[in-house]
Length: 93
Image (cartoon, rainbow, N blue to C red; front, side, top):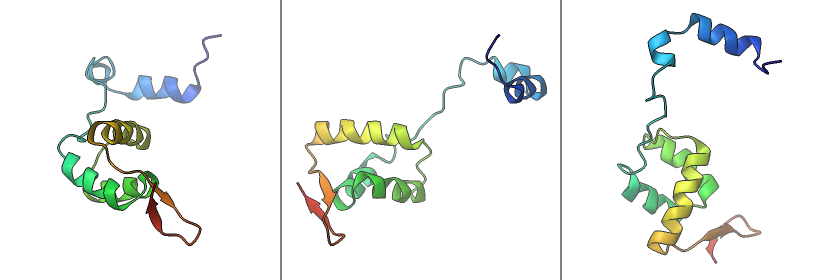
């Protein structure tokens, strides 16, 4: 009928009403503060390997957000794209 699971209902019943109704519910990511470090990672690693390294340098965003921002960086900064070779090394395309 409403397509809402019981878990969603219980989350809203038990949650703080002010926090749940807040318009500032969007996750804040710190991509811009770590931008230079992420560019260094993208020059050394492929995107899939760069994400865990970005987490180590305290990147707080989600994986999909990271991939979208990296795509923007590739276009904006003309970074070389890396791929995995058959022997497991990162090579420039």
